[in-house]
Amino acid sequence: MTPDQYAVAGNPVEHSRSPTIHAAFAAQTGQTLEYGRLLCPLDDFEGHIRRFAAEGGKGCNVTVPFKFEAYKLAKTLTPRAQLAQAVNTLRFDADGWAGDNTDGVGLVRDIERNAGRPLKGLSVLLIGAGGAAAGVLGSLIDAGPARICIVNRSRDKAEQLQASHAHLGVPLQAGGLDDAPAGQDVVINATAASLVGAGSPVDARVLKRGGLALDMMYGPKAQAFLDWAARHGAEPRDGLGMLVEQAGEAFHFWRGVRPETQPVLAALRAQL
Image 1 (tube, rainbow, N blue to C red):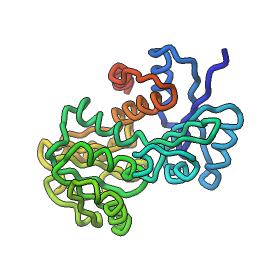
Image 2: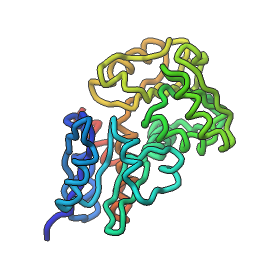
Image 3: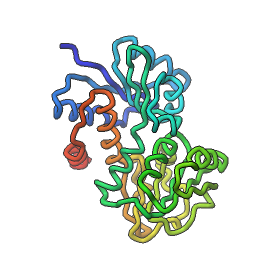
Image 4: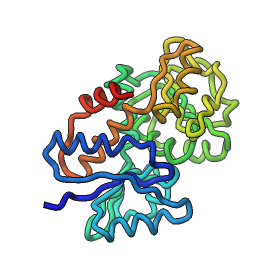
């Protein structure tokens, strides 16, 4: 039996642990599939994805910087992908591609279950307003924090994200990076700063001693942010748990089977 083909599509993708994660999920659940990496040129994401699908691919995860483009390629969208207007998971159905965004549920599960931080009633700072931030904001709101502040280098993008989610019932603020409020219970870095090892894009006053500071990146690229958080008394956390949890949700979207994520996360942590 020929294994079904899946991949992570983005630029860059060589660092991605997704092939390891999905191989573990497949072994755990008895699914026959192979999962690779698909490096897409910045100016031809659509062409590469269509070629992969035409050659028999069944679906793909989408990472930076193509989540907004993936949204436009999907014929049908889950409610959370519609809200985010960004897609990180495509399924190549015969009657049209289906798009989902599993980033938010992955992030919230990691914070609440793996890090042991229920979000209900907390103050949350979300740094960034691109595809990564758009993908998680709805799920963060669903978790019931007291308030969320979105800050971004371009204030107008933060305000657009605020406006598109304002109807969901949790107080939202938006502003530039200098507008980030002090003493936040949870600080989430959803910018691309860690891709170049740039550390934190905001001042350390945003951190609360004993609060959680999470970077969506993982491995060496996240280290500058994690070191910054630890130096200022916060609990640092990288994005590896989020990656595994969102992958579990994507696996279910493709295969209809929900894998156990915590053993896979523990194995990856042991390797790093």
